[in-house]
Each structure stands twice: as structure tokens, then as C-alpha cells.
Length: 85
Image (cartoon, rainbow, N blue to C red; front, side):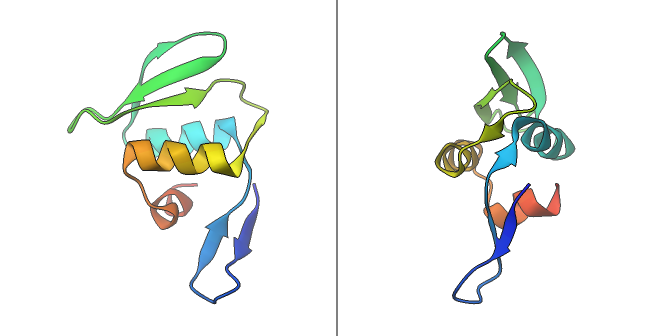
């Protein structure tokens, strides 16, 4: 996991995270695995139905652009994810 301070002093920013770290944080945020394949996992939040597609290769790092897309689809902010890592 890479967490670095933002150059503007506006708090911490996410770098590349391993897929298992993202899965764990999403589970702590009450997302549940709906379906999985060898490459991807589909997770859904039980209360509001938000669903996301996450890489299932647990030890691989997820590119920060892909991570931003996951956060956008899940309607989660970077700080919220950081709080659940």
C-alpha cells in the first residue's frame, strides 16, 4: 500500500494498492461478493445496491487510475477508503 501526503496539504492521497487491500476495505464497508471469476469479483452493497467490479488477483497492485474508477463506481471518497484500510 502506498499512501502519500498531497502536495497541497489537503490530506492523504492513495497510491497503488493491492487487490486484497481493496477487497478488505470494501468488505469492512459492507460490500458483499455477489459473483467471482478467475479475473474479477463483483461486489454489491446490501442496503443501496451499489455494485462494483474489482480485480480478483489478490497480490497484484491495482493501478491508481483503476482504483479511482472503482471508487467512483462505488460512490466512495479516497478518505473513506483510507479509513477502512
